[in-house]
Length: 125
Image (cartoon, rainbow, N blue to C red; front, side, top):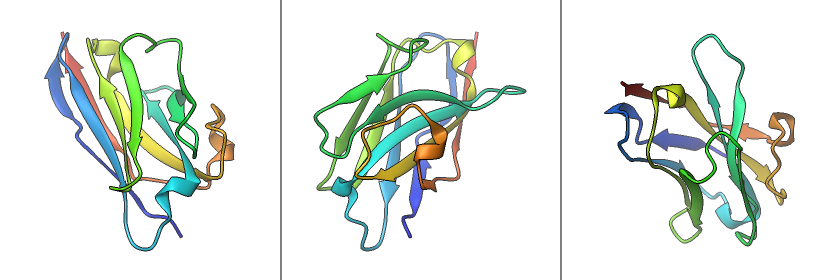
């Protein structure tokens, strides 16, 4: 069982930067998992934000955040990051990280076996 904990959410103003972290615990071999970030805006379905494959050599970013958000990982620390720059009120959502064993970094939710509890990001105008 992989346990994921997201941190770094909060209330920020439009145009600000924020970095979310997704940390694992226990005996998880973090480097063996692709990590995906997804978000669920109020009243909407959950959507893909970004992903990085288990090898760390390939990452993908959703169209709505490309050029503003960056995903990275530090396998030694067992942590993945989502750097969010130039946020807008449309980025307001609960942000979730998810793990997929030896995964390619898919955009599809059902590919991910383990999920965190989520962290709230609220952007004021």
